[in-house]
Image (cartoon, rainbow, N blue to C red; front, side, top):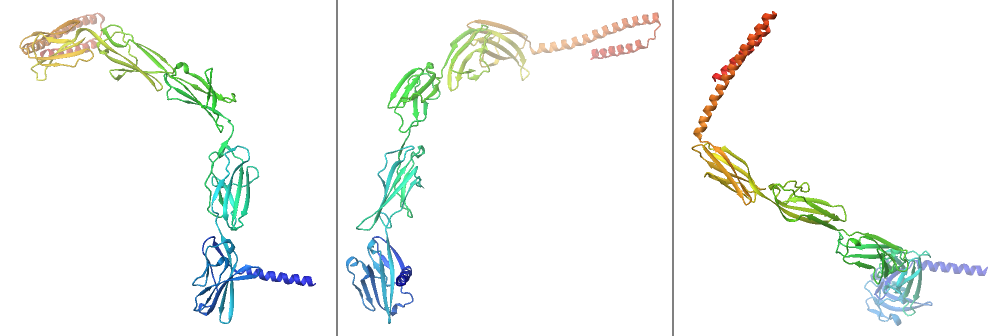
Length: 556
């Protein structure tokens, strides 16, 4: 019964004490800085306060005095030991505590005397300190895929409360799962300062995707983050690729480099190259260069690992080439009328495309000459392409021969008083043109495709025979034309009119004679047969009208 009563009393005391403490004010300060501990005496007026005294809890039921302030008197500091020289009183009666330490985490009491009453205002002080730094140490040299390796240790020194460390990969938190992620934390307190140092060790099973991943550690609830670290991820080769490094298109005389790329890390440093049956081993490199390739280089090439020849890759190499032979070529001279055959031979690595030009004008097809003419003269060029490859060849064709006059004509001048004589000729080299008569307004056309046209203007006063002569080193040709005077032209016109009239009269007489013969025969037939002559009379009328019409024309 007594035991029960004692225990009940104890419980009541503890409950009362906890209730009292829970109602006390708490102030948090930063380690090493000045802390202001307030004296909140509530409704008590400042002018009523006679004495303000600060003291602290030394533990074990003991207290220590810090300072006293009486009305109208200076502050009297009585602090000793660790608080000597560290305390002062603010104007609002708050206690100022400099260079806060962890040992300052205790209860400070402000005692206020006013009138005949005394009030004590306890304040609980808590000191916080951020870690001095955050760094990852004891880092792994490399991480192996599929194996739980120690990645490193994150260290947070001299903190209060102890730092809670978390690990991050590419700024995303890592959560321990006991398989791919394992995190172990350890907290140690400094016996002199009371500050805590937290170490957190991360073990991690890397993946191939972790290459270049950034790992950091941070303190929960703060912005404190370590510098990022990266690790080399090691894994075996799973795939091999053969790269062909060459300019495009690859043509004879170029160089081509074969590069064997393996996806392992670290990458292999030795490879075997199979060069169309020739095996070459290279060390401390992943490449092999073929110099001065030819069309015979075309084929399949392979590379493989030295320690695993079954892991190989292959690529086909095609060397592009284009050879053309144009026959004949250079300067070609032919006589007009000769046969000329053009032969173009092509040796290429692919389908070719051929185009022709004559004097830089595109032709629709390859030139063929059954019998060359002067117009065939010119520079012919062919261009053969295979993809980006291109070759050109050309020949210059000159057609020569004695000149020939194709046309010799005359026409009346625009003023009606002159006559223009036109001599058109062909030949090569350019023929010289001469006339048997002197004329004016000489005009010569450009010499194109072996053709030339020469004109002169004359005023004939009598009938003339004019000759045009063309000549070059291969021969001469001459043609003549009659040119009449203007008076003879008028006589000719008179003779023409008379001739027309006489012709019409003769035609009329012939038609009349034919009509007379027809009528005579028609009447004889009617007498013999007794037929009615109605049809004959209609035909007679038509014939009479025709005779009359011709007679009128004759009169005109």
